Length: 173
Image 1: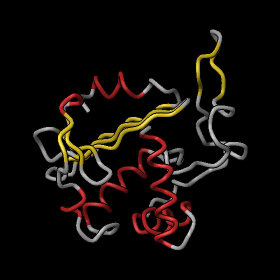
Image 2 (image 1 turned 180 degrees about the vertical axis):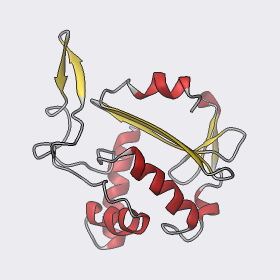
Image 3 (image 1 turned 45 degrees about the horizontal axis):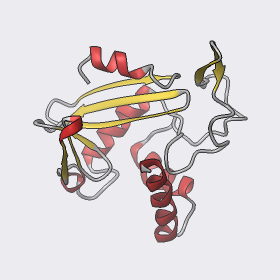
């Protein structure tokens, strides 16, 4: 259910922004943030330095190419690097992406079953100002936290669905 909501949200953003979802993200997030190694890559035209996602199927790790759309939609699938995620956090908190960072990271609701709170598109630590992005798909997983007070960013990216979680837990992300 949640994934479909993000697809619908992307369609609404296209209508409100007057441009396609990919172009909106590039113009309003990636370029202002200076994220030069992040983009929507076609799964059938990945550059040599892009990690391929893997899934265990029938006891063999297989590429995720047949499990995802060729080009990402609003529910995820952008390709990035840990360095670009660090760049993103700095740009977000510098005010380069949104006018009011405080409004975006203001808690909107508690999610007690996850021991988290939620802002506008961001998870929030239950008792600190740490901001969290996390997600996964077939053959990919990701978690990044940013503490705006110390400027500390910690990011884990994996090319398997469960791969980021053990490392994130070990780092207490």
